[in-house]
Length: 131
Image (spheres, one colour):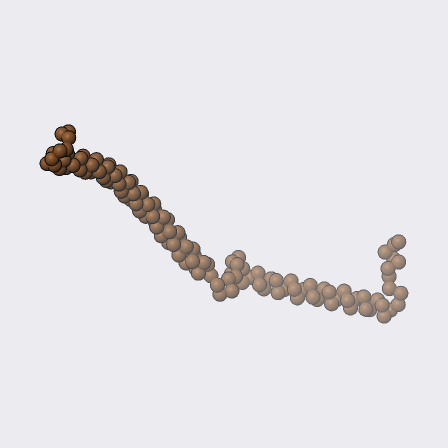
């Protein structure tokens, strides 16, 4: 196959081919001109924001930072509160143990007192064997 095999066979075909090539060249030139016009603008190097800027996103990010700090401070405060509560529970447990020991001692004393009172009553009765 040679390039000469692709030649138009008639005069009308040659004119149609030249018209198509001319239209393609014209479309390319128009597109190139529009591209040059857009590139020559003063803001050609910047990315258009279409009315929405980074300020809104920055503000939201700052709010997130503030909330994160508040949450972190709240967690620290909760940890301190839990430590205080744990200390209080330990103190209450120690006080409960002391109270149990006191109740046990009081029970023993009451039992001894009842035995002494029983002996004293028995002494006063006639015919009871002495202890």
